[in-house]
Length: 427
Image (cartoon, rainbow, N blue to C red; front, side):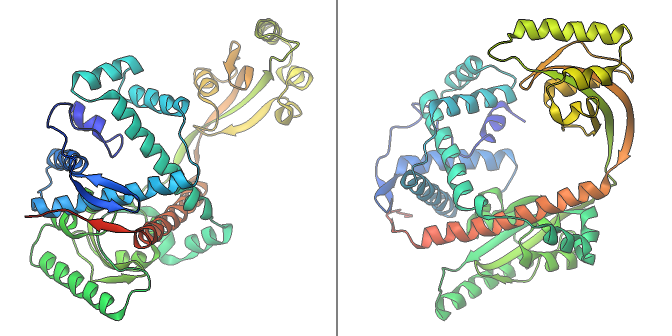
């Protein structure tokens, strides 16, 4: 992957290199009280075109690509408008933390990351503000969609109990998707027009048209500019109206039209893969925790921990010292015993120190955000936690499916209830 493609996958929007073109300020769309200019549209088209070329995706006609990109800009603009009305603000501290994280993902510090952007011709301040927009949109989605989605234990039980649902926990599907949408409270004529359009698209696909190119040109889905790619999904992660259809399709097959409240869907299975049993390396550990406070400094805690460490190495019982001294009240009554710990259960500093220990060994004092720890590894084992893993995965599958369904409906409603006026000249 090139340096550019790595940066471009971090979030949807990047500014075209400064000086590449003079600003084109003609309005191409009015969205409520805001506008999208031709320069904004052309900047995004260049970005999307570059992304598609890097993925070796055949480009649709220029006019179709411009229409799709404009629709994405409109939906993003509407989300930002709602976020503003809802009082959502992303402060500089949050933004800087996100930038530092992006830099770290690219193996750089923030200064190096900024220098890279400037060297490659990008305006750093504009980059910052567009990242702020991305975080803002994520927050309004969480507020309007994700916070309303919940999963019950009964739903998890039902998914795992169903023959199709349970067997599909061992399979993953790589799906592509095309949506021909209909507005809420659509008239029969609107529904019929959408159906005919969807049937025409399906006929072209069955005649050999490229699915990704057709999705980019025709789909009303949020994944259109990704060629309709939904990525790898379990059945439980799919909208419920896809699940039965997926189980009936083979790799490479295209579905018939699927009707939902959002419109007419076409899906294609591009690949299928299996999933083996889930085995993890567990560690049985115990610890002693001390925390600094207004009366006890970090230095004092460090000295006390070292003293406890030396007493344990001198032969004193770890469990007895944990019960007497540890400030982790939950584990102290058990002699500091944390039970069997899975990878990722503990904070990184604790886990890294624990993983370096052999059974029976006691760590030097280890600092984490919770305080100072002494850690002892009692034993290790390989544990088949497939059933627990399947429950966790089933829960995530249902949650993601519900989020996707709710997000699609919310964005469509937001779009339908807003004033949008087009001024895009395709001639």
